[in-house]
Length: 312
Image (tube, rainbow, N blue to C red; front, side):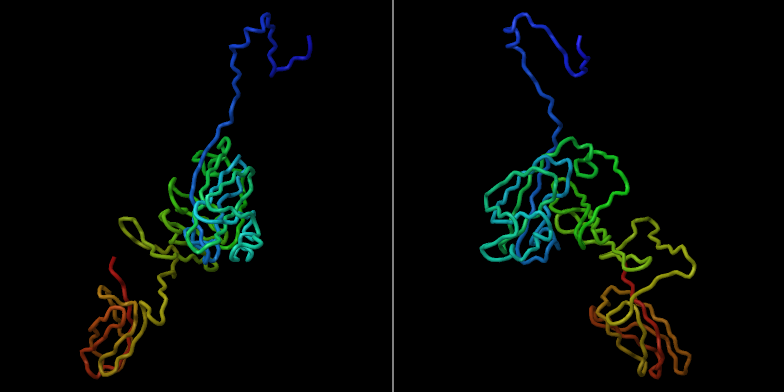
């Protein structure tokens, strides 16, 4: 007997006609499909906002991708292999005499194979839709590539990009844009999935974070706690601020600030120690313009601090 081959089973057939009823089947690798529509139009400054940008990254680097079908629905777009190529001025010239990429005309489609990234660039001012169908293999890497499965990743996972472009995006099936983005510049952005993310968390310096938008606590107590003695609340002063100082003239003064509203709660603190001091009170509030501070002593020329807080 020859050498044993574990993947081969040898059989003896007496009548070859008996094989005609045998069906040969092949094992197919599991496939995962995902669909998405992107929109682009000229006039945007790169990837600023996904529903109004001039170019968009339609394919990420994905080693599990087998094939992608791309359809330009409304007008010609240019397909590019890098963001630098997508940002080329040759793709922003009327009639595209020498595009830096591959033009895909309105109603045309193309199928691509490979794992690399791809960008689509707008050529007209009106919104152009680019539709995408992805076919991926076994999605054990789903956590990285968005299949909805689980994955064990090798750390550290190093992802690099440019500026505020996302290196990781998370959303719900059917969303137009990402609900959560981790951007190349370290910024975290969140949104509702219908328009570009509008709430951000950004590092502004050593040990300093800035929230873009409104920050609120959802706890029952609603408390802000500083865990280090000597730390506290800091509010930006200056023109049109919520905090500042004032000086009375003949017992009254008008504080100009666009930050005051009809619902504002205003705290006053006298900082004078001189003669003719009176009791301070808030007078007329002109929303978005100013508020008046009065003393019950018409001779009061003292100084004071003020603070505006808005009720929740």
